[in-house]
Length: 192
Picture 1 (tube, rainbow, N blue to C red):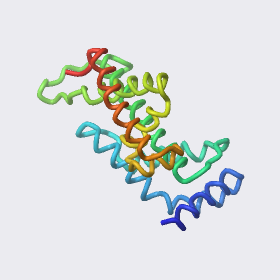
Picture 2 (picture 1 turned 60 degrees about the horizontal axis):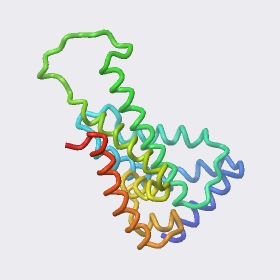
Picture 3 (picture 1 turned 180 degrees about the vertical axis):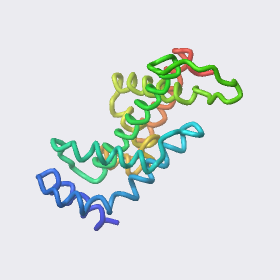
Picture 4 (picture 1 turned 90 degrees about the vertical axis):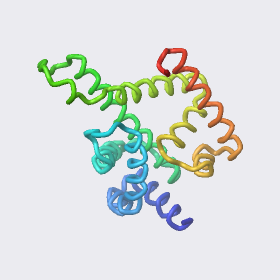
């Protein structure tokens, strides 16, 4: 695994340095991990979600190749950024879906209520994102721990490496963040 991590870091550095061919060599190496992260994030979405894991990976890929000014420090930094992009894509998708359900630009049609798809999952994604943004204002490292662990599917060790902290610090931050987020959602009246 260490050789692969070194390969990824070297290719990321080459790509950041302007070597476009490095990206072509990098994608086959990181694609499976990106799909794993996407699959993990999609598994938390509502049934019948219009985005699929592959589409989410493709959208992240498109956004990553346009991020020429980013300097990737490590493999963990790259995957952390990819997980953040996936989260942002899903939140944007959920918010857009909620806007459309509230009128948006769509024409109003009367449908059989039994055909309606519950929208609470979309609203929950947006609410969690708002609460996580509030946590980021209070303590950005704890918010990053949540992004890496919950959205990125990182292990405690991977999270510790990505944030350059100890595993114990990650566990303490994780415990604090879960309680903080639950209280934040309760205070907003968004948790039953």
